[in-house]
Length: 424
Image 1 (tube, one colour):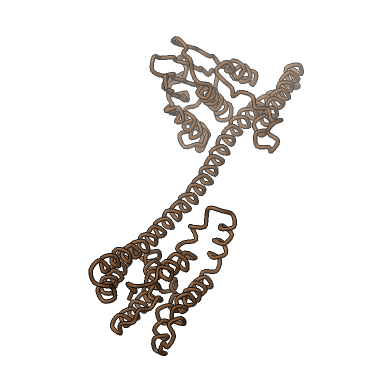
Image 2 (cartoon, one colour):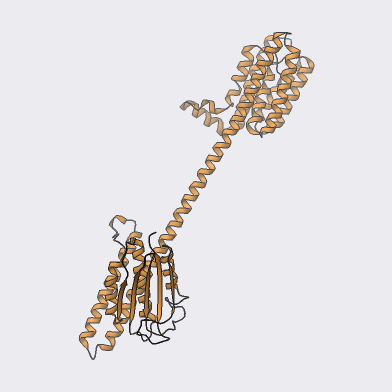
């Protein structure tokens, strides 16, 4: 058990010296050389434990050598107290049990050995690597040994009290130093785990942002390519029909095909420019807004489709992204009419500004039966894209056969209606 009469040099040197090589390396973190020592000790924990055990064995054996005439079994008991520390981090509880048992034998035989300081190192190891409940049991065992050793080995009177206070302070220091190290390790592990999770979430967010951007670009590409190609095909068909009877009209139509193709190519270059690495040279022009609707309608009229625009109510400020949404919805609906409309003689685009929402209607007087899978039909991809655009602004889009313009016969017509709330 802990010797109540250990010389101050032996006990203080043993507790503050030998264990400090592991109690813990954090004590040396204040300087660069100490940091190098700490990294070296962390890299070879088994070798560190063996070195601690050998150094403690050497320092605790010196008093026995000076005493002289020590029997062999006392030397054996001294080694049993110290040498198990060589594997203390592999089996903290087992090492503590062996050393505590050797301390009990020491107390029963009445021997006072400096090597019983190994109990403090074993207690520290249990507190640093095992749950708090096991550490508390180990501390209670050591404190019991302190009481027993103080009563048996210390002088009567004030000597017992002084021994109890001194040795109990060492036990408390070993216990709280070990538990503090365990708490710090758990905190550092949680911080590292949180950093890993945050890094993973950041990468995941970046991937989601990239996917969203690809989706947006794909939608823009669909609008540009589908609309302009539909216009070009319509113009080319008209030129093919008119080139014999009206060469001038056919030439004008082909000229418009060329202009439309150049415009589509320019828009595609502008859109795809943001995907290049050298984005500094990309044309990051503004998105189309309501001011571009007239140009869009002129282009559709040039393809031979009569389009009329009506604005009702008092226009209100609308965010640029919402204006681009309205433009794309009108563009997609007119493209669908060019591609899938049958016997269309009139298209009416209405912007109805209310106090709560902007309602956009694109209606034609063509055949009410949309081809299955057409972009403007209820099951097509074009309508899904328009709905996605409107949903970004808490809006809705619907499409279906209904009465078109007021001049449309009953049972004819196809209409696309969008509603975008105003005021956020």
